[in-house]
Length: 273
Image (cartoon, rainbow, N blue to C red; front, side, top):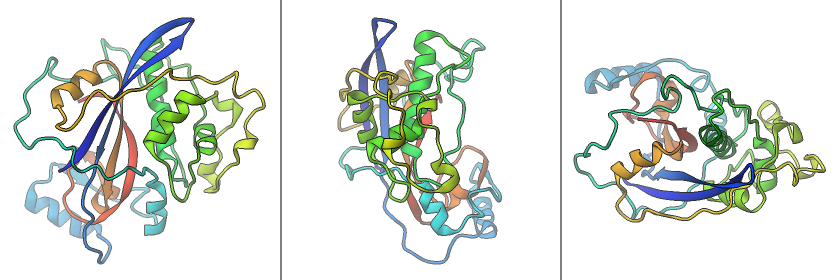
């Protein structure tokens, strides 16, 4: 499928020293399917059997939500740049046969998994997860002591539970303003589904904030899978994906869109291949 690939190169001041960090943003853009009846689990399972889908579908805490509540979770907005895409050709191998930041030489550098709850704040959570994981990698802190505030990043950066946010805006905010620790503004939007005013953040948020120094694009037009894999070896990737109806039923296996219409965009973190 067509998509965009944008590599972002960062430097960060950690412990008084300048550290270089590479982030990569990969956003896939797909055409919306025609509207119709909502996809059912029985229909999806029958389809997976006919196409040897390679993944298992079942009821999940997302599939049982109303369609409006499902869409409310999908708060990743990305621009239409469909002139950038991965070429449709066989992928050449690169370096290692696999990579996983959850298990590098037996050590887990990944930030803990969190739940965004009833708010379209996925961009903030993905950005925080990537930042924390990259700091674990840079400082070799496998116990992940970092806990930055997705509520502050989201509320002060301009995101809303109903409309979501842009990944580019999150990166710009991290550069210009940074993000404080979780205690500065604890996350409550997930439980209430309501937005939180930036003014509720702690009075010393600026002095408690971690910033990234800069970011720059390093990949244009045809995206390179080899470069993507190479970037993952330096750190996790901030990614956006189009969510289709079938993904709400995902239980296990290697997911590939099988059937159902598009519901919206979601931000995630890629930690390996």
